[in-house]
Image 1 (tube, rainbow, N blue to C red):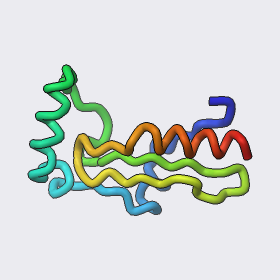
Image 2 (image 1 turned 180 degrees about the vertical axis):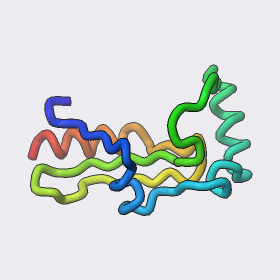
Image 3 (image 1 turned 30 degrees about the horizontal axis):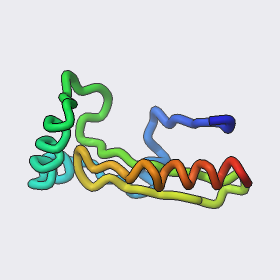
Image 4 (image 1 turned 90 degrees about the horizontal axis):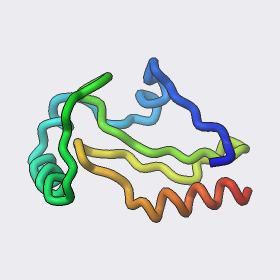
Length: 95
């Protein structure tokens, strides 16, 4: 990635974007399906670091501040399609 990648340890951007957090998102029924899929693919979780109840997300921001891609994970194991993220990154780099 030739552009900058930012992190936000205080999670201010995370909260402003309304990304999921809390027991309801961490322990949903969809989690069981996601865990089975991950295990079948050979993945396992060995530890938890940081905010354990925080769900993930992906944000690709253009140089002018426009959001080119936004994905909000609803529960643990909910990930965006990799091809969508790569396409958004390629578009951002081309801009």
